[in-house]
Image (cartoon, rainbow, N blue to C red; front, side, top):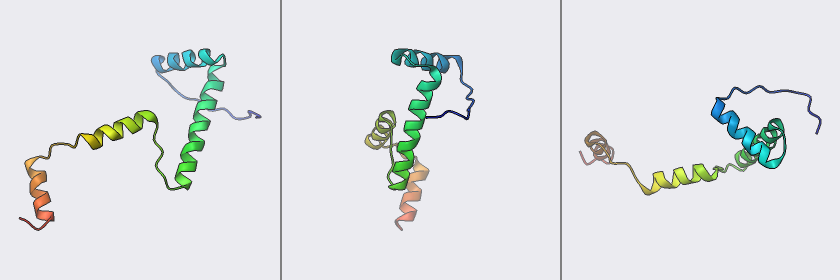
Amino acid sequence: MQKNSSLMVRLDEESKALLASAAELRKISVSDYVRSIVVGQARRELAAAEAQMISLTPEEQLTFWEALSKPPKLTKAQKQLGKMMRGEA
């Protein structure tokens, strides 16, 4: 793959250190690590969009599942609105 374009990204020090550590594990440069992860993720997201399917990372899947399994407590106003929408009020 010919690399003829650059992209600058600003990161906080903690994020930069995490990327450097992950790149070191793979024995590649930080640029190569970011390129391999980000381009791969972008491809997956575009493929999911073309298929009209939502694609979630494992962390996003867990967050979504937790939101579904723990519905929020409705306020009194929200309960009243629900009754109004159902024609009960």
